[in-house]
Each structure stands twice: as structure tokens, then as C-alpha cells.
Image 1: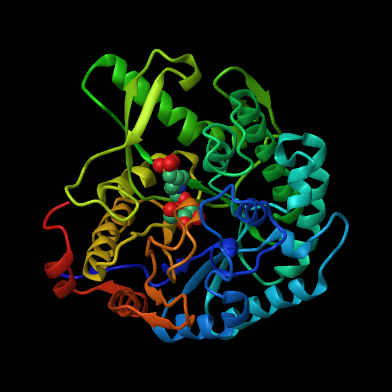
Image 2: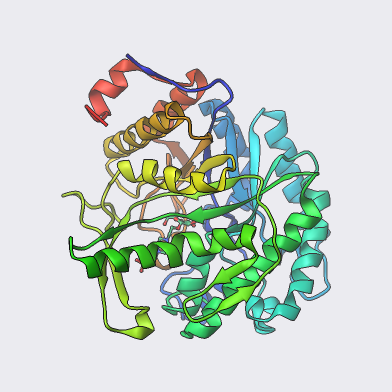
Length: 421
Ligand code: GBH
């Protein structure tokens, strides 16, 4: 038998501004790309800032219901106090086009990049800088007229970890004390945005949920995995409702707030073992080795993890969306298999009563993958970076049929699916 999804379940795709737009010159990433602190330059990326009409047409023709994308704060405010009307109008046009084509927008306000001028003032490490975030939110309220789903931050803990702990991403700070401070300020920023936008919009947050598996059966490793799970996956979300953010060294008071939905980004699992290093919070996490084949990112494929992520997030009793799930591979048959197997688990979660309302494949098209550049191919649509030609892969059509019929046909499950869950 095939698998039928609810009629109002959204099948969409996801992107982020800096990864697709091109010439995103006003943010911190662009700056570090130019001075050679990052290995790749985003450059024209997918040239979406010029080809957005074509991209929205493609989504519509392929039959996708929804589209998650992000607004580039630095486009709207290229300099402190300077507002760019043209960028505002362009984003508005994108939103109108989506409405015309019957595609539900799901808009993220911060997807890793910030205006360079804001970062020069200390970014989210300084609480007094939240007044600039509030100015941005104020404009966003007009810009997003008619949109239902708005997420404040994409993967706040990834932002904190990569930017302030491992120093692998801008602003390349390695300071655990600052890291937790930034996390607490992101919670304050979320609360400010929630107060300003709730009512007019459903205001949510997007959280990456890697599954934390203990490296062994030992008590020490189990404890370590629990700690990693708490620090990375739950401490931030807990604080939204409790008003207390429990960092590794101390707690921070933050406003008690809410989220109207929680977006789950799920890719893979981590293997966690105990460590004696206090600077690593007494644990070490690395990518789990769960499948023989690894994706272009070096990640294992672990479909069951999406069910575990949903189950974990369900504790907050809010509507959930899978806001990202995808695979970087040149083997498009593998991509189809990946989608079907993860959707089998999403379907099971719905059957088991979890409130999952949509699935957004990462990504609509190949794009700039941060430190990894243009090599990883996450797209349903292939991008030719010489000509910017868009070529839908077979997976784009297979996913389109699932979106249009709200069903995964028996034949597809037989060919690509897991035999038992
Ligand atoms: C998401 O992050 C992002 O939201 C999206 O922009 C991105 O394109 C997509 O996933 C695919 O990667 O040195 O091992 O720490 C997912 C979480 C966390 C995965 C940071 C990559 C860096 C490599 N990401 N991680 S590592």
C-alpha cells in the first residue's frame, strides 16, 4: 500500500538568502570571503536575485506547495540607519509571486548572516545591539504582509557553536563564555520578535536536531551523550518557555516567550563520548558512522533519526515542520531513496499522533554550502554555475508527484523505501 499524507500537509523546499541570491555584499560572510578568511567566495551564487521569477515558476510547475527562504537583513539595512527600498520591493515581489502561484511562504529572518556594520559593533554578543534587530523586525512586519509562517532564527545553536566556539565560521571567535552569552541574546532577540510579530504571523523558530548517540554502552558515554543532547538540542528551546537559559557554566535570565511552531532541521546523528576536557564540557562529539555510504558532506544516512527528532521536539507541544532535510550527492537515485525513506518516518510520526505539518527538502537547487563551497550538491534542481541554467533532476519530478498527490505510491516505496520501520 502507498502512504497517504493529510491533504493540508505542505511539501516544500528550502533555501537561504546568502546561499542562493548572489552579490550579497553587505553581510559578514561576504566580507570574510573577500579577505580570504573563508575558503570559497559566494559570488553570484545561483544568481537568484536576478532569476527569482524563473525559480518560482519552476517550483510551481514541479508542483511544490511551499517554499522556505530567508530575508537578508544586510540588504534591507546595508548601513546603520540606511534603509534600502529597492531590496524591500524585490522581496515583496518574491512574496507576491509565491502567493500568485499558490505556494505557501515560510520566511526565516536570520539564516547565519548579519549586516557587516552590525557585526562590527559586536553583533549578538552585545545586548544593546538588539535595538538594531528591532528596527529590522519593524520593517519585516510590513514586508511580510499576508505571510503566515515566520521563523526568527535558523539553527541558533549552530550559529553559536560555529561562530563562537569552534571559530570555524564568522566571526571566528573561540570563547565559550561569549558563546553562551550570544545564545542568551538570541533568546532575547527571539522574544522581542515574537512580541512584535505574533498575532499578525505565526512566529516560530528553526532548530537543528542532530541525534546524539552514545559512543559505547558505558555509563560515562551515556551521560556524555545526554549532556550533549541537552546543551545542543534542548537548552535553547527550554529557555523560550522557562525564561532561564542553562548554559554550561551558568544560567541566564531571558524573557519568557513562546513559539507558534518549531521547525526541525534534520540531517544526521553524532557519536558522543566522555572526555576529561572541561573546555569541551566533558564530551566529544563527532559525526556518527551509521551507513556504509557517506554523502558529499561525509554524513551517514540515518532515516530513523527524523522520527527521533520529531519525538524529542514534541515535548514543547507546538506544531512542527521539518524545515530542512536533504542529501548532498551526485547520485540522484540516492537522493530519491533518501527522501522516500525519511518521508516514511515522517508519515509514521503523523500516524503516531505527532503534530507534523510539513516537510521542506533542502534544497530547491544546488547552492553555496558555506565553508564547503559549491561542491556539495543538495539540489532537486541542478545549477550550472557557468550559465546559471536550471536543470531539474529526476528527484525534482518524483518529489513533485508526491507533493501534488500527497501520496507516496506503492511502486516508489517498493523501489526506494525501507522494508520495515
Ligand atoms: C543546515 O545546517 C543549514 O541551515 C543550511 O544553511 C545548510 O546548507 C544545510 O544545513 C546543509 O548543510 O565541521 O562538521 O561542524 C546544518 C547543520 C552545522 C551542518 C555545521 C554543517 C559544519 C560542519 N550544519 N556543520 S562540522
